[in-house]
Length: 82
Image (cartoon, rainbow, N blue to C red; front, side, top):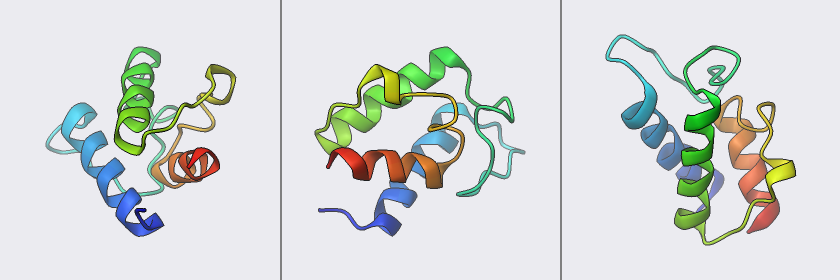
């Protein structure tokens, strides 16, 4: 099973690759949703990525903008379903 640090790296890399511009400085605590980097459509694809990568199922009611607002919070959410 991946450690929290490994998960943070994988998720951060995905977010940067999929949603960030070259000049965006995205860190583990960068606001993704409230900062405008990830929109509601992108959040759905991010949820799908997490489910496929970690072989989990995240209930839709748990996939809130708050839960997806930074990499640290996303890791916490994923850990709940591992």
